Image (cartoon, rainbow, N blue to C red; front, side, top):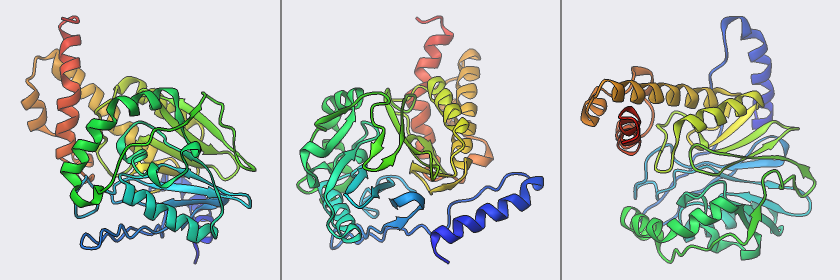
Length: 328
C-alpha cells in the first residue's frame, strides 16, 4: 500500500472510530534517515505526501554526531516547472545531499525557491547548495539569521564535528512579506507569519491537500526547544493552526502527524509548562526545584526528555520570576 492509499485508508478508519474519540497517530510509512558517520552520509530519503509534497525526515532526537545533527524535517513541492524547497538542514553537506536527492526525484528540475521557516540553524545552514537568488525568508527571520549565524556555526561545529565541514552561512536574498507568498508555481498556498517559538514563525499550508508545514511551532513526541520562545504568543499561534484543520502536519521536529494530533500535543505541553512556571514563580520556588519535579508522566516519553525540559526551565523561568516580583 503506497502512502496516498494509506492516507485514504486512515480517513476511512477515522470515520468509523469518531464515537470512541480522536485517532492519535503518526502518518505511516515515512522513510527515516540512515546516517553513516564514517562516510558523512546522512542517508536522506524522500517520502511522497499528498498534493505534490515530499518530506525528508530527520531523527526525532537531540543533536549528536551519531545522527549527523540531522533532527529536522525538510521537504519540497514539485510541479512540471520546478521545485520549491522548505528548509535546508544543518550543514553544507546536508544541503548538498538534500539537493542531490531532490534532483534525483525531480529529474533535475530547476529549484525555483528555497524557504527558511525561521531563524534556527537547521533551517538554513544548508543554503550553500542552492542558488542565492532562490533563498527566501521573512524580514525578521533574515535579521535573526544575520545576528545569530556566527554563534550557530561555532556551536554546531563543536557539537557535530566533521558533519559541519565547509559550512558557512548564506543569508536569504528574498524577503517574504506577511501573506505575500501565495503560490509555489501553479500551487496556491497560504502562508502565515506567526510567533512564539521565535519572533517570526512561518507556516506553509496547502488548502487543497491540507498538508501543513508547521515549522518550529509544532513538535511531535519531542520536548520543544525554547532559546527564543515566548509561551503565551506560541499558545495563541497553535490555536490558529488548530482552526485550519489540517489533515497532515509536518512539524520541524518529530514524526509527521495525522490530523491535528501534533498541534494538540504541543499545545498541551506548552499550556502545562506556562501554568507550571507561573505557579512556581508565584510560590517562590527555586529553578532547581522546578527541574527536579519534572514534567507529568504523559510527556516523559518524548524525545530529548529530560535534557530539553531542563533547558526549557533554564531559558524561561527567570522571566516568570521577574514577573512574579512585579517586573523587578
